[in-house]
Length: 323
Ligand code: 6GU
Image (cartoon, rainbow, N blue to C red; front, side, top):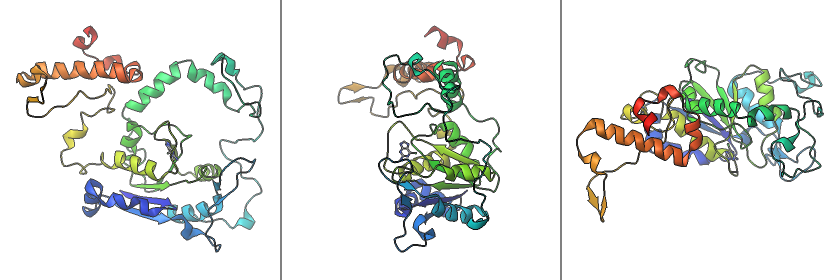
């Protein structure tokens, strides 16, 4: 798998030369290149950002520098700016004006919520009602934990272009599994308040498979750490990456019946007065499997009830139903 990463801090990715990722690179399984976005600037200050249109704090990464870089790495022609139409019409045409017909009455969701009067109703607001409805929520959670059916989806030679973005859908094990079959990934790390949203829009309009992902509900200073997280999740699923491929089969978040894993113990059987559960020493594999399965179910129910909600009934066995 070929991996290109663009960042204003390419040094961040030196850690990828360590451990299993480093080994995979020496084996020729992975070819990782970290590029400096500033190499595509032309001004003396090598500037990559500008103030946000519409006002607000912070800086936004400019589209021109990113586009020169991405055109080159994706092997796409850079259009002559003079020939560009005044307005490019995207397949998912987005107008800047808000539509009140589609707007949702947010009070249905949270009666006590306080909204900023300055913020206009959003265009897709109507869809939020469906999500809060619950059904959509479940299928999203189910999607997040189930394996993709079409594994060849992203294995074309054109890179899959991935932008870390705290305001994007969550990156899940399902995404990692799908992307582990890709031949070429290109990550674009944003900094500051993010990147101009027309960058992903433009490349989608060019037919590129563009993804935007968040790695969790918290804010980082930039996409670099998020890319490292996604890369580790993706590459360890590649055939030949792990010494023992069995170790990825039984893990949490894998497959239709995704549960948190049971607790783990090694020897000694008693350590500082704390005992390993008796059944694990019994040598009865049936009983051990049952114990671990029950523990996985009860722990998941306590810690991540959303995963239990998303469980496919078919993933439960008869004994599970009793617990
Ligand atoms: Cl992908 N980027 C940043 N900057 N913060 C994040 C994130 C990504 N995911 C969670 N927080």
